[in-house]
Image (cartoon, rainbow, N blue to C red; front, side, top):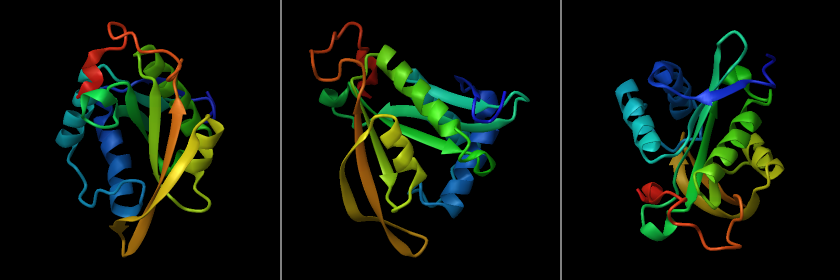
Length: 188
């Protein structure tokens, strides 16, 4: 399986070391996460369990040799009950696998699974740069820009803007949600 056609599967606790390494590198060296202290593997395990416990997807990507390429998950957009059908996506790719279709494969599966879980909207909050591959990916996958919050983060000695993007899932807002099928569990 070529890197541009990775295997997408449910992430497990066996993936935590790889997940923590990818995320830790981003916390220390990147701006995709606004965290400034690398969380422990135990903390990452707790975070995964919370997402999975809400009935939401937490996915892993690997190549045909079993090499871990990246991960994604959808979490509640906000904790208030009225937001329960809206999720926020997160995608982190190993630096050596970027630009090879891994993010696209993860996001495609994440959107599909969130739709099956009864979610109706997906939000993406992305650190804004003029040439952001993450923004380009989300645009290709049907997200639209709904604005940029300026200078809302400060990391690595600079102010950072955040692009807000949104995509309808399934029927979106065209019909009221079937509360029995939509899983009240994502309310947080």
